[in-house]
Image (cartoon, rainbow, N blue to C red; front, side, top):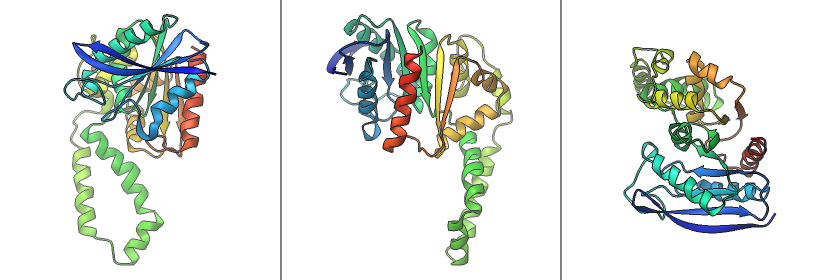
Length: 289
């Protein structure tokens, strides 16, 4: 399907931001997709991921808007992170709807900390009817250490590469043990279990990263599509967090939440076949909203 790609300069907190609208010749749905960019990067995405996703969706009649946060890419302002972009997301949705009045509802699409930013924002805007969350960022020092111990050190000990390194005399046990004990120390830092931490959520959302994400998802009334890589520490940290929390398990089991696993994929779904699968899942899910 034919589509137009139109640059937009719009205002957010008295700063000019740049966005690109992908508008199909014919709209299949009244739902538009706003790509929330994970950092630090801009609206093109790793290996042109966001451009290719936007064009793929628009080819099926789904309008898309991708943009740069303030302080990133071609937008004005000081550098920001995912905790400081709620106003930018709202302004991008405003601009998107003004450009394409047929859009009545919006789905946010975010990878890594952009997924976290979407959870911070989505419940506060009634126009947001869905969120696509890829490898959500839930990193804490303890969580990272536990993920390394479980998904790196344990697997490495039984790998052919590790055994060959030991037999060849290239293995440095002192350096490896020092690193291992460092991660064990970090993993034991928290005195409370994750399930205890994430249940201490009150309205409005506040607290640490994981508390705010859980609260945001619980308060959100729309649907969620969670896509997880298999070859990715960030994804493993998220999955470990869910397994340790009854609240997260209950949330992920709700009918409104769809979970997809792409076991071979890395963090950014860098291969063409991985990217195509994400595009297909996103397209089908948005068309069903």
